[in-house]
Image (cartoon, rainbow, N blue to C red):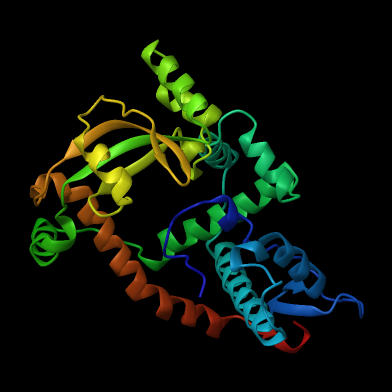
Length: 312
């Protein structure tokens, strides 16, 4: 089932957004895979979308015919779900304004320094305007879910305190360290980076430029790390660092690691005031999850829907 309950926008998710064409007649080559009232998705369109996102499903090379068909059917149902929600957007007269779209584009692009964003689109063979249109549709899907699934999502102080008491374990945290990370293939390169850091160069900038680690595009930001999450060869040196300190180059089979500790936080349960925003988000998510299924089922019953699984 499409994860519309999670309001998150990533490049892969954006590629999952279905298009829809107002076609009432199709040629034999343009068989209709999905129809929601007058909006249709052809087999050709489905194949085009699936080509873009199939790597998110693990590709097709290592799957037999039955597994490939299951993956394609699952994706077809995701597209059906989106088309139903977009049909509801028409009923509610909801749209995404140019300002909303521009702001969303800026928010996404700021996480991809330099030409990294354009490089990702190029690797996925997606034109920017096509991606932007898919983003617009995705934002509209999310707006419908926010505004129609829960028309009023207010929480009382009593509900917040009750959630806090029932979820003390989930809200508690162990000792954690937030750090940035640079991974380099050779000791010489690592020593060169350490020298640049000693001369006052910015760690995040160097991470984006030189690190081979997955989090390089985020300036090496690893988020919060708890004990037990790192290999033993790294953990002792990592957790000995104080905020602001930089580690020496640490050798592992993957290369040479340099860490910069940004912040530490100890074990314990934060106060209710510190947790309020997290609690509101948790309560909102629970309510969306509880209401989403019945809401979607109601929409399916009111629209004329056809889905041809045999042609997939």
